[in-house]
Length: 637
Image (cartoon, rainbow, N blue to C red):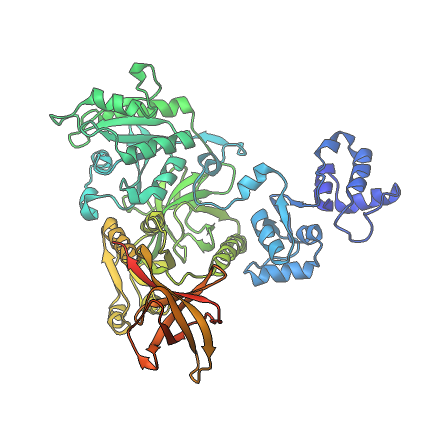
């Protein structure tokens, strides 16, 4: 087993283990050997900690902790420290021997050096998995923190399209958000903080259209509570059911807001019964789900809905950590033409200040400005504050964690590690063999959430005979570089909710690059589906018209051309059809007829019992004794 794993198990340093092993004459610990025979590991464990014998792993795997120094990694995998440092640098991580790296980085470096490593426990393996899906307990860090304070609830408003989510938030905020969205469908995530009865509540709005599944998935992960908007007229719809299922998985409490009760055809009791079929049983029916009949448009019972949120928040005793470095989760990220990259975040730990050094995914920066949801500048942001910051040099992913560091170097190193991990994954994907039948797409969107929604939706489209391949993606307006890249990769540019820069527009027609532009996501998806249908291979039926035996093969002066003579056994051979070569009952492939002759005269067909000569082209080499079938491939509509 690995010496570093054994040292951790026995709570000794590696030099101490070597010294004890030498004292007791236990073999396998001499020199710089990092692999210890299992029997030797048992022997030293019996001396130092016999109660831990059961925890020894009887295998030859190298187990690494969640974090370790570069020097410890080098010793664990048995590679020279200089080689490990060099490999880190080549992957963009500038680290010295004494600096710590996380398990994911150690894993990737070990892979490059040809060594398989494993996390020490299943729990650590789960923590080390890179994901943009947010885990609420993890981001608020209430398990490891000691200075915990009461924090505001985070509420996600979700539901089927046009069931009133944005209207509810509009009523609460007294603003008109709906009018700014294309097609009256919310296509961005918004977050804002309100005060109700002197208590703050943070709201996150997620799109209801089916294309925005990934964004809604994060909504259920991040929220303390979900307000599920359901029309009392229509009842539960596909996205309603999706939210219920995701809430079950994430164990997020749900408050059902039965909307549009002011309409004459509203049926509250029927809507309750229909929703109860999916596991959300009203409290008045003996269940544990609050159902609040409301009218978001006419501000009916909105106070009862907010009272319910505060009541559940008190019962849940929501806490936040104040004794660890500040952290936030990215809600949205986009480029503003005047101020650069803007990142919408929700503070999930301690606080952020102007001037803080931060890392966010593979990006490091320094917070330049902080603004609240009304656009007012502030010096800092506290727990559960939804704010916009500037200072990151690049767009980051929705769901990425933004973390405060003591120094610029520490922030950059954390970003470099994450970049190395993501680049490793991208390189692996890039090395996969391309498919000549692919439809190549280059995606552009105004903000990262929109881009992710478009990407997720495209990947959900069934792909059987024809594959969709996303060759590139980006945020902002379509640029010259985008057009040139699409030209090289033979890709169509799908521009969602964004424009084309003038210079890019100039070269679009010159390079004959296809651009599909829309601010409604399902219009782009319809175009993609149409292309799949156009490119889909139609089903065909093979009809055998005749069969002939190859009697002799003749020399040909033309390269790539074969000449042979044969006799038709049944049916007929036509000059405008293909020949299928059969040898010993096996289909060897097809040949194309160049010229068909009978008695040295060019003819269009040869009938049964007639002999003929034919010149063909194709890869299959014909031999005397083979049979050839004249086939017709019929396309089935």
